[in-house]
Amino acid sequence: MKVQRLCISGVLMLMSLISSYASAQASFAPPPIIPYGSPISLESAKKAAGGAIAEAQKNKWRMAVAIVDTGGHLVYFEKMQDAQTGSVDLAIEKAKTAALFRRSTKLFQDAVAGGGEGLRLLRLTGAIPIDGGIPIIENGKLVGAVGISGGSGDQDGQTAVAGAAALK
Image 1 (cartoon, helix red, strand yellow):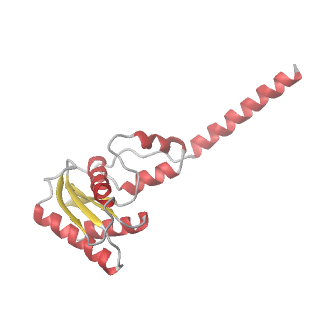
Image 2: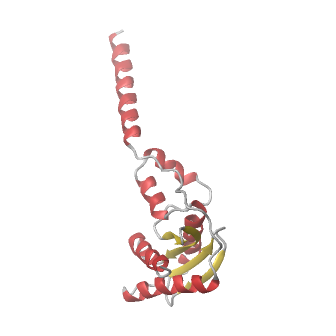
Image 3: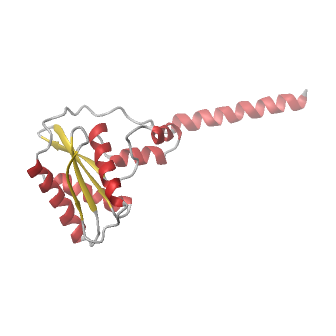
């Protein structure tokens, strides 16, 4: 009887700890209210890619750069000399994620790293939780996104930010 009460007490304590840990985890916020605009033009896509390439060259990074429209369709792509081949698809996927979900892929990365509810994002179709995807906003509307791969997550993110900023 005493052992049974101890087991029940232990289970209740464990459930309480798990519950408080789960509630302490930051939940993934709903999508921002950013309306979709006209899809990014080829000229603007090249300008965004140019900003990203300039940032990568300044830091001596070798990157793959993808620019997609509001539907996540590839508009422009450039792979710098000696960028790893594996970065091609990753750059495109990061750009698609940022466009389709209207937020930076860094937010997905941080939510997964936080554990708890954030781990559900690992199963979210079409979302890659790795820094390097940034929405492109013009006149308050989402027109596309930039995706970068080839460096560390921080380097990819920094380069993507530079690409999106090239249109401001």
